[in-house]
Image 1 (cartoon, helix red, strand yellow):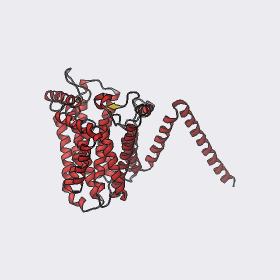
Image 2 (tube, helix red, strand yellow):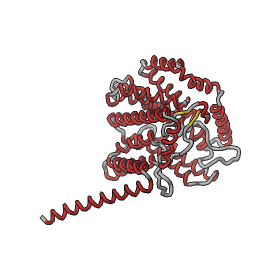
Image 3 (cartoon, one colour):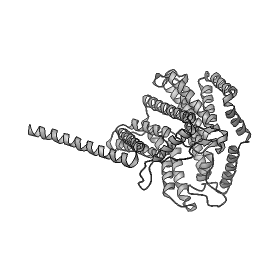
Image 4 (cartoon, helix red, strand yellow):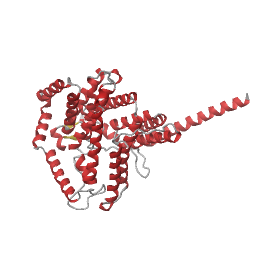
Length: 442
């Protein structure tokens, strides 16, 4: 009895001490950082611990961070300031490695795309090292390059883990729900008074977001109208996110077996994302979504074509969308300032590429004073950094992905669960590539 009492007493004392330590830590956090930061830290810690118990939960956490708080960072600097995305992806990678070490995972899923993607990573590493003479190796540069490589390699982990229809279906559902949440948040911040929106977004400065002057306007001119940004800081990046998630959602509108069996929900989600995408005034993002949906309609769901035509007519006819239509026309004509600036960037990027065509100039800077790194085009950006060699490997990887998908289309079409997932994921990829033509975020 004494032994039992001793064990129970020790356990109770341990619980009490742990509770006291947690209470003290929370109290200290409230005193030093305030309520908002404390809530964010506790939520993040809880999510991280939960993610460490289940790799699937960890993937969902990665999706949530990408869509809802993509630029959030830990408010404590440890050599560098890790972002929430760094921590979420790191937690997933830790669980993945532990599964291999414990013997729970013993087989690696490979696809034809793995080889060119691995070659692309090696080319990036070579270009990074070769270009270090062009600029200083700063902690910020090293971190961003490491994140670039980590993001690419993370695709291997996703492919290896998401190896069943059920996992893929759940992951797509989480992406759609988080994307819908981001769109609703973007619409809400756009609709409320600008002073309130500015105050709310500036409150995120405690987790690394900019403060003051965070709202974005057409051509940076408040007289031309506000652009929806959600929590993505940049309206074009936000628009690209919405285009990708919208393309992923499009097949669910007519699927025989939609995710979670919630066709009506996905129809509402698609409309919400479409409305928010219009409010971003991101023309390349809208073009990406339209191209992706047209591809879905051409390949499988012909019923989407009338819906596309009706939506286009509504946007063209409605009085309050005329400014949006005008922006498209100006962009097509190259008449607005933003398009003209892009043309200038393209010209400068081609000048750099003509001087350093094979492997580019790396990631640290340009070697000549009259050229620079940075262009609103993902492909030219890769060519600047990794040359024609890197761009060719990237295009090869994309060709392999789409070619392999085309070869397996009949298998996907025969499965009512897999069909909308197959179409949606590849449509999302098409949307991201289209967005990359006019922006470097993707």
